[in-house]
Length: 579
Image 1 (cartoon, rainbow, N blue to C red):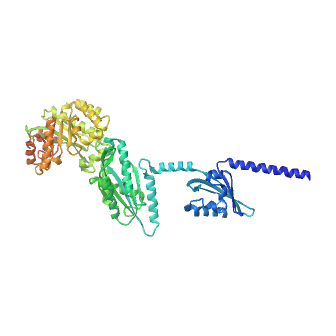
Image 2: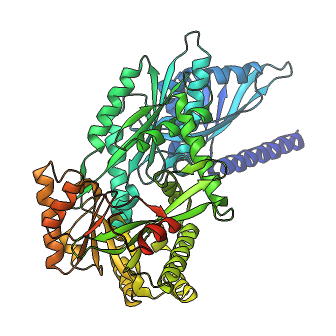
């Protein structure tokens, strides 16, 4: 008996030590281990349960209390999941969910569990673990935010917008009554100029302000997204008619088409908005976004600061643009460009002052294309750099040829695009062309617009000064239509002001515009600049300009732009002014 007693005592000691090691193992792990006895309905756990959940482990008895720790909106799902586990519907359960922590706040936890069953397969216990994952969950949320949100404006990005739109389309198709959705494509007008003139800090602040203004107009459930640069999408759900969309667009434009104050400066902006409606304008996400883009482009093309609903006729605009860009890529190689020249007349001395060189394009496929149509596309596509270099070379060659024939005039003016001046090689290329064509630089004039140098004022002054030092003269084109600030006018290394045609058109009928033109001419003369009035078409306009002291005129009254052969025949070889 003694031997048997000792053996039993030894086995009990081993079991006790095993239980202590098991308990130690449970208490040392990061997880809190727990167990529910399905027969007695009792809950037990390791000591870490208190640290992780904020509750004493006894609080979970009876087991109904543990359900109360789950947030109310998740309880039914959790209960059903555990019923599935008990019934054998799932072998292993794992989920991340928020639990009430210590009755104060809600925290994220990872819960894992499985069932222990008897020989008949009946569940007798649920065992599992619980782990606090607040840091991990916060990290995941940050990753998701980087993945689906625009960090600058704290709005959903393109990926989340498209995903939401796709889900709404699927949801709509699944209902017996199809729901209309509106996709608004918002593009800020002239945003690049804000960045270029004031800097990216102001540009970023403007985008943040715009995003906040848009968000403030949104109805509950609608979505605003920044999808890149200065572009925003809006998704309007459950649209009954177009009037609701129109009202939002009017409200948005009243907010965005004005000055926004940033760091004690007023930043002026406006927005063009394109709208596509599901299902009227397409059943597919890509088609709807493309059509909204087309509508926005149409709004911008029709004067900016307005909104347009998509219609099928707009597609032809995009097709036409693509055709023009494609044609421009081969135009130089196919010799489809030609230079035309419009005379500039000195009406005081009755002599030819010079010419403005103007590009014309006669496409083999598209026919004659207006410069007003193809020049912006050439600039946007970057093709203007190679085309512009060709223009300078052709005009300098023509200039050199005419001078070799002894024709009398001062200069030929060449229009420059801002894209050309931003090219770091522009000055070097200009020097090479001057040397190659052997033209005297004093016979060359370059025309710039106000918007060109405002993009980088200091760099522009440096570059224009270097160009003037070559002997080339510089004219400021379209004066009065842009910034027209006297503070920059006195610093610019220019020789000539060109008064825009829009001022000349009404000088014989509008006293106010007449006074403005008179003031510009007087100002230019006072600071030693030549003045050319553009777009003069009537004798009355000529007489008024002459009386104001403007001796140089360019316009249809004297001649439309002509080919080099026509100019030589009508003006140079005959020295005729009044043809």
